[in-house]
Length: 257
Image (cartoon, rainbow, N blue to C red; front, side, top):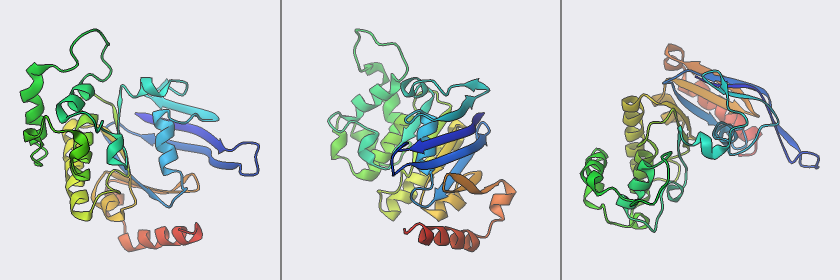
């Protein structure tokens, strides 16, 4: 279980641009839950992900995993149990390396370093089998530089790589926003399949309200560092998309988006 308790976060403290984003923010996410998060720009969506991942420190409050306080834990330590896919396809992979090299790095995440070969050749067929499940023909491009792949192929690879090792949490930061609609749909279908196969607790930030409704067990709408809508299970299923769209549009206009 992931818990954010009494989180406070100020930006630009002591300056004329000081802004209090989180003011006693609380959130509990049970194991295995798939949470879709929507909200206007500046609502706190990505900041919440960064707080969970340890990318930004909090001014006050606790981050708990199964009751253990990880608030002071460094981000690189948290990454051992967190997989993250970014909006920019180039951030989740190394473009100058080929697919095999990228997968080998991901496969060694969290393992001790030593003077050994970076690539385990005995796993080549295993990697090909994993790539074939994406349905994008990447299993035949194992020695192709990742930088030459399409954005959709790179994002699919990044998604696969982020879940290659045992993780507790999968963080998806608008991971379909840079893709065309058809490719974004493919990535979302892959996302849904991987999340359910791995049974991994997932938090997905998206600007696509259709994806927020179609995917996940729970929907959060953030505004000014608060969850103004929080529905899960049947309550989420029964939600009126037009009503949520109306709330979203009102907030977006209010924020000047």
